[in-house]
Amino acid sequence: MLKAVGVHKTYGVTKAVDDVEMHIKKDRCTALIGPNGAGKTTLLSIITGLLKPDKGEIILSGSQKDRREVLGYLPQFPQFYDWMTGREYVRYAGELFGLPRKEAETRTEELLAVTGLEESGSKRIAAYSGGMKQRLGIAQALVNRPELLILDNRSPLWIRSDEERLSSC
Image (cartoon, rainbow, N blue to C red; front, side, top):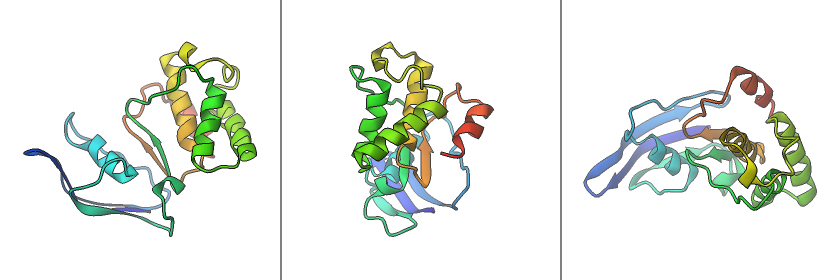
């Protein structure tokens, strides 16, 4: 599914990621654990294609030309368009992934239901609580049915029942 081969990233003289080698197989749950400043977010940014490594490469299985075809990503500090409703935002994310409008609408309704946001989908995101925004971020990360879901700093709001509910997404 994912392979990192000799990945390096430096900022000036600081080595943020130093010769990372890893292999994650399909249908596995893997965590990057380390102290603040260890390079976890930098490595995830390289995996998602948001940053380029100084050396090394990230290999994703399959023949996709664009990582967005197989990745879902919830950043550490997600940003939202507060003037949009949750429903509009998830649909917009689906369309950015290339889903046809009707499919994006259907998928949005599925994900609002499974994340517990069905009742608040028509509210402006500006009115959402922190927990609701976290759930909205999860919905947008799942909208394209990714083969690989990347969550940077899993929320403490995430509970076992959420994992069971979202496992089919």
